[in-house]
Image (cartoon, rainbow, N blue to C red):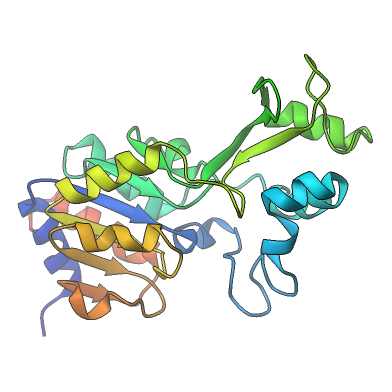
Length: 247
C-alpha cells in the first residue's frame, strides 16, 4: 500500500502551482470548536441563520451581539502544527497561498503571507453607515461596558463585525480565490467537509486534489489522495518528508 504521507509530499513537490483550502477542522487542534459536530459544535442547539444573519443584526442588534459573543469569546488560540506546516511550505515556495473559510486569523499568526479569508475575519468591525473601521478590541470594550450594540465613534450608527454573515455577499477576495483555484494544478484541502457553498465549489476548479479531513467529503473519490486523519499529524509528517528531500 502506498504511504499517503510520501505520496502527498511527492505531489506537492512536483506541483507547478499548489494552493491550500482550509476549513474549521484545521483549527480544532488549536482548541477551537468546529461548527457542526453534534454536542460540541458552535451551532449545536441553536440556529445560526436566525441569530447571525444580516437580517438579525438589523432587526434586533442586541440579540445578534449576544449570539456573536458566543462565537468571538473563543479567543486566545494559537496556531497548531497544521497551520505552521502550511506557512513553512509557503515560505519555501511549495505552496502559493491559503484560501480559508476560517475567521480565526490563525494562518496569519502562523506566518502565512498570502491568505484569502473568504468568510472575513474577527480583527475589526465596520460602521454600517459610514464604514469607519474599529479594532475588534474597541468593539468588544463597548459591549463589555454595556453599549450593545456597539456604536461608531464618528456617526453613532451600529458597528458590525467584519465577518461574512448569513445573507451577506462574499467579499471581493472570493473572486481571487476562484482565480487561484483555476490556476492551481494541485489543491490541498485541509479540515473542510466541503459542505458550505460557494466555497465548496472551489475544489472543482483545481487540476487535482489532496484531501485531509477527519470525515468524508463529496470530493473524496475525485482526489488523488484522501486521508481521514488529524491535520496536524499529517501535515507535520509531510513537512518532515519535504524538508529532508525524500518526496
